[in-house]
Length: 235
Ligand SMILES: [Zn+2]
Image 1 (cartoon, protein in one colour):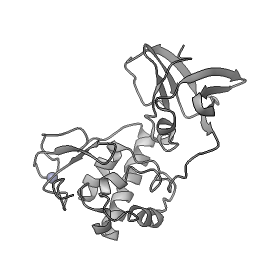
Image 2 (tube, rainbow, N blue to C red; image 1 turned 90 degrees about the horizontal axis):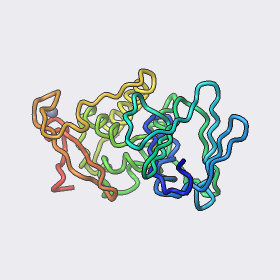
Image 3 (cartoon, helix red, strand yellow; image 1 turned 180 degrees about the vertical axis):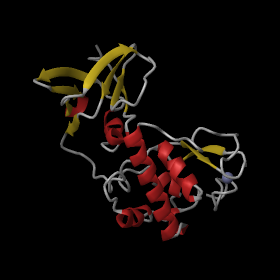
Image 4 (spheres, rainbow, N blue to C red; image 1 turned 90 degrees about the vertical axis):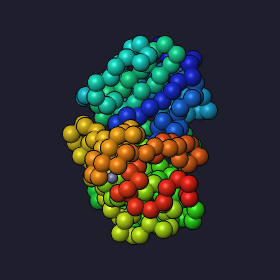
């Protein structure tokens, strides 16, 4: 199926996103797939092996690239024409010798908010919206939940992290934790600000703005009225 191809990798399910698989595997060539009992071993170039154990409920499907997916799979491996999709919380582990150190897990019960706050303030000039996506500082927050959590707490993504108060940072992280936990339980995403550029803010009616942020140029969405702090021009 996808063996021999360079694959695009996505981890739509928040529980899988925490594992950093997309960042580690995206763009690598899939060299082989081996089944060992209920374990499936996927070998990628550079000696990286992904082990998935399907337990009772997990299953892999292969279908045409771009097929509509209902629900949120753990892993999508996308080749030129086909994609492999892994459904339902299996064991998913990367085996390599250089797993980068991750920050505290936003989905932990309870999350270590104080350690996250200290991490987020490490770089003096970094905007909070950019820092929240750095998995070495806080593990698990993706671009959608970054936008939703900052909007919920009324903090601009462009505010330098060092200038955001402890209370506000705690509110942002708590919102991310609660929204993501709820999403895992209900299998729903909420989008009050994400992907709503130009539409009215659900709180104050001001048009939502959008602009690329950080080195990876991920799009930040924010309300210029009720998310206090700086805009992109000054950040
Ligand atoms: Zn607003």
